[in-house]
Length: 449
Image (cartoon, rainbow, N blue to C red):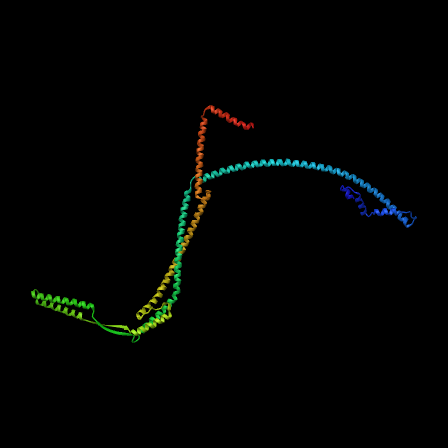
């Protein structure tokens, strides 16, 4: 109950009844007990109970009176609290209104301050923008005042030269690589063939030795003797006979004419006769020659036997049909030479491959240097264009042309303004007065406003 009154709550009868019941007071029991009261005997049990009840009723009445007084005081206090609460609410509402107005005033002042700051900021930004535009114009004037495309063209020529060198090196490198691959392929084929050639050489040497041993066998070589005159001897004999007859004719003529002595003529006739005899001797002389040849049957059998063995051993390199030992020997010698030639060719190919490898290393080094040079020149070109704020050289030429056009227009504008100012300065006085009045009339408008 004290909680309810302290919190400005109105007490209802049901609330009071519930509080009394919660405090252990049975109002219905008290009422029923009061109805059953009678006049018991003094000192009896009922009399004592009656006295007790009377005392309880008296106590309850006093408590009721206290409670009623307390309720009335609570009602009075609650009423005062309600008035105070109403007044408090009004004061609070007034306080809120004042705070709202102050907030609006403060907001307006802050807004005005922000507006002023924004105005200053915009002025600063416009000034910064103006300075930036001036800076950009100065930078543009510095960049495009003079056409410096010749430096770009020089760089372009250098990079074209470097690129041509790169393309040439690439083509040369490709040709050298193809040549080297071809030589390596041929070298591999020869190296794969070399063991077979070596085996063929060994067999050829063995059978050449066997041919020599066979030729030394008895009955394999036949001796043939023939007589024949020498053609050179016959010619020499004819010449000597002719000279001898000429000498005899001369000696006989001298004898007839008697121009020489007898001894001289006799000597000449004797010499001529000797020449004739010697000439006939040489003309008729025959020489005996001794020729050796192989027995045809043995030779044929031997050649067929060796050829068959060779063809069985090397079916891919078979001997063609031959019947002569000399031809067989030539075939074997050729196989021996083939191995030696192939070995030398392999050595030559290896040297050529090493030379090509060195050349390829040199070409690759040159290609790498030229590529790096080309990349460096391209980087310089890009830097040159970036420094001049241009994407291409055409864009740079366009910027230079625009700046030159702006400079011409600016110069023409300055000339026109200078001519106009001179005309205004040396114009008529009446026009000057009118212009003066008109100008000052225009200036007064903003002041009046």
